[in-house]
Image (cartoon, rainbow, N blue to C red):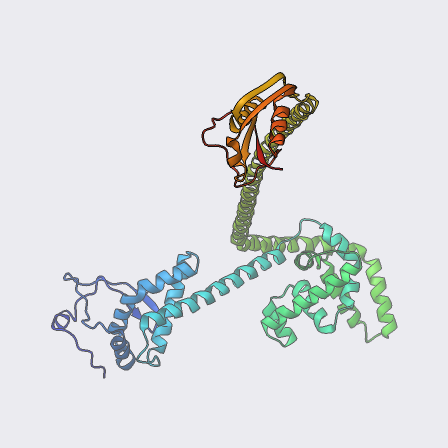
Length: 493
């Protein structure tokens, strides 16, 4: 016995008529949604799912199980609705299946099981199984529609297939040929094909698929190119043609008549009787054909009407599927167009960028050409200037002036040197050894000499000489002023 107890409020409302919460019947696996009484309070004061589950498992309390259902029904239904692509009827079936599994496995679930997680996982598995089952059912119905539709005329595929079909069937193995004949010539369901071959429905489906693939390869070698699906559809619609309505009755009557005469004649006579009766009683056969045609037409009309009624819903589903496929293809085309437009837009942007780059390079090329032309012009101008500079005559120095008379009477040697050096544009610097001699007085009379020649003559008469490069320690006299001219040195001979 579970230790779950009812609260006082729940005791007082134990017998109240439910009006709001849901209850689930494990015996019928059906969920109903009653409501609470006027107070609107829950019947259970228990918050532990495990306790409610144990109470149901041990005592069979439908009230405890109903409380569990009321708590988790929204979770299970919402999860199922998402996983079956919004099919509300299929979501309800999945919800029913999950709750029925919970009722069946209540006693075997571990105590530490989190019920919410268990229900979610169970919903996933049940929804996946339901979706697979629904897909198989739709495929079987579409296949049945294809097999049961009465062809309005010969198809191009059948015109190619008919001449080589029997040869192709003879190349199959016995079991593969039996499977194809039972499935497409006898138009049996896969379960019936499996029963006839001694296998399961899935094994029969696989054998039929393999046999169709072998037929397709043989036909391809014979020049008949059909897909496996087209081959199956062509066989289902054209493999068996309707025989004349009265032919079966006529043959049966002939066989019975032949069997009745078997006691009076041998086998050869019976065969002759059968052939002769078939030839001589053409009028009787024509009447039988007329009589049987009406009955067969009525039966065929009834069968066609029934098949049309059964296939109408499947055709609508097939049309919806085709419409969805067309919409998917259209969306795929739009997506491809959008991708192509985006690629073209990027290409156009790249072209504009490249054009701008080309324009910039052209401008730079033109600027470089202008700079090169200017550089050539500058080089030519420099060359002309250099040529002009080379062709310019050198400035010749004026010839030194010839002094008609140079006369010094008892004058200091330093004053004589200073006078003549200034006249000859020379700046003498003296060797320290000759400085004492500069105080000597001289008397000189010279005629028709330049100032520099007169200076050299006077220095020579006083044992001195004029050099172009003075020594580093040589100096000018301090009391001499400045005048322009080249620096020269005065030293002893």
